[in-house]
Image (spheres, rainbow, N blue to C red):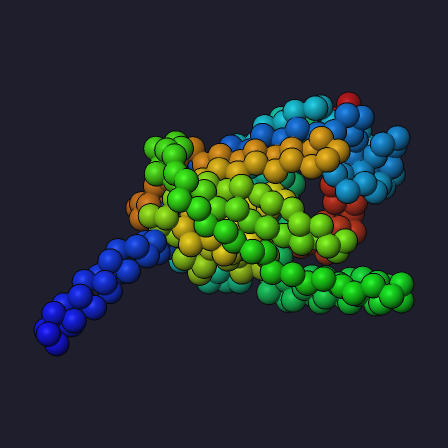
Length: 295
């Protein structure tokens, strides 16, 4: 009887091990993001200006947006480096992270100009301090109004629904988040339980978090969905729709697991005017690009 029980326990543990997603440290991921903007949407301080949450962008930054926009992303990960290439109708940008030297470089190509900036660990710590200060100020302002700041962790509800997407066998998970007004928002995400990107492979040296691993790569894929990094697998598709008509649809097209990656892939290409982030910001940053980059 003891041998039978031991065999059953061993078999059960084997099934549990098989159910765990493979942890991947090297990958090349291609994804597409389609964005639909609300009517009369624009960046900057003009009529109807600001991003999805409103707000101006400063002098020289007001311009109307098309209703639809498509981005394509190629993300390359290794234990030492990370590279994210983002191509869109408005221009191209590349983020290269060198974890060995604790440096992240952002390259921007738009309106005929090639510029960029780099950050290091000290810059990241200063940015986190500013974010913490803003969160504290928000909590304090809510407290003055007699309101309680909700710092709710997203709730994941796994289902048995499944379908094939871009060649992946996917399952559906519902992510529930609670806003400051207590309203619960649900986002449907399709993920593959076969693998998950290792956190160390996706987290930049001087930046912030990505689906399936944490880090800036995930944040660029996640759009407005909180909790993607908590999924026990890799997100392949999701769609977010807001009441004002703002919509994001993300679809992973192809994944190469454990590929051979040449370190030259992560070199900074020639022709870019790259400055420290502080210098880039002091010279106008993106405002300078849009003001001087085109006619």
